[in-house]
Amino acid sequence: MPVLFEIVTQERLVYSAKVDMVVVDGLDGRLGILPNHSQLLTGLKVSELLVRIGKAEEVFAVSGGVLDVRPDRVLVLADTAEHSDEIDLIRADEARKRAEKFLETQWRMTDSTAEARLDVIASLSRASVRLRVGRQRRGAPGLRSLEGTG
Image 1 (cartoon, rainbow, N blue to C red):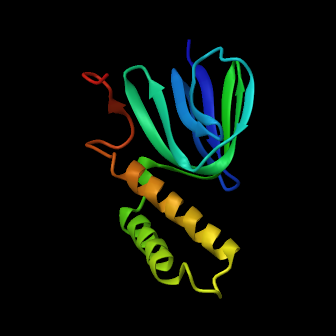
Image 2 (cartoon, rainbow, N blue to C red):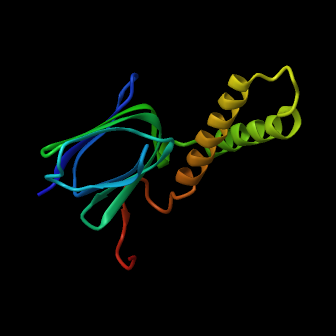
């Protein structure tokens, strides 16, 4: 029996559906959440989030936030979240290139603070995840069939 799963950001409800499984990277590693999972509250890494419904899947890019798991509901409160179909690959690639250029050219400069460097590393991580998730789009938007995989 599927479980209600929702992804919410400060701006909007990104996704809401009954799902069979959620896979996401928590602070302590990758988590696979099934219906009737024991309660869990953990922080999330910048990562890909996979949702399975039957033999189909949907993929999202999430940036931080928390995962709240209850036996009858799974909730992601994310800093940012985008479905693979929403990701602008050109903008994500430009953000990745800007971050990489900063790291290559200004990493050792004394006027670049540790906080600025960490911000750039976080930007690079977000852009890389967005690119990876966005490139997974194939064919029709939304659900992808898992038949023949695994």
